[in-house]
Image (cartoon, rainbow, N blue to C red; front, side):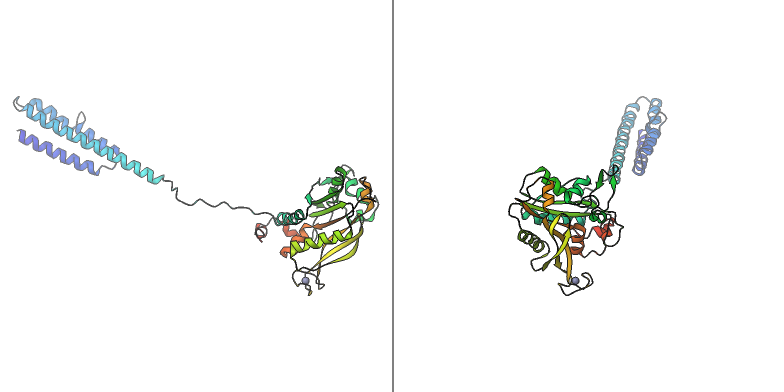
Length: 347
Ligand SMILES: [Zn+2]
């Protein structure tokens, strides 16, 4: 009797173990457990049947059933742990974060070509002992015109027409020269400053005009300053900025705030003076305007024009950038086309 019970139980164990092996999830394992060890399970039925056996056979039968029960419980627990483990590894794999993967590069911006040129220009003048000053873009007509020897009705006002605000009490500055006035108003001589900044004109945009552009102006006032200082400083600037072999020439000109006034030309960088389309066949490029500070300007800020003399100059940053990089149209600086803007850093 116990032999046939032993065989049945062994067979049950093998079947359950086989089923557990192929069980592919916790639900299937639970179903096997209920079917085997539950209240109406196969092994439970065998345990109940022990009571019907002759008393002599019961202890051995009970031992057999208990042994199989222990074995199956252990097998079920092992399979459950197995499945939980593989479920964890599956999730770990699916949600894996590969920390060795290179980070995605962020597009890095570059400085605007006008910022690069401005910084380079200021560097040259700083090395020559100039400090940097700035002033407001919205100016009074006094600082923009009158103090610079451009009284109301002067023809130069027409050339430098701009946008007026607050009736005609304020205007968008037409040049950076008012910064020179503000510097002189707030200090005592000597002064040696460069003034970079944005300026405005009522110009219609074309290849060489823009209603706003940038200037850098310089001013050096001190006792004993002469035209020779002007010439030295500006030729030195050209040589430091464009190269030591670049030829220069001064031409007489007119500005209300300087006397005498001049224009500084530099040798064309493309043809080296031979004549080309950029220099219109002359071999020369206009670079900047300059001159000795007009006594009326010094008097306007209360400085003694008998004692102090000085020189000033101004140039367009866009013009310098166009010459330096060979940019054919001033509007390209303001269109925000990154394909254009990206080309200048490091050149
Ligand atoms: Zn040329």
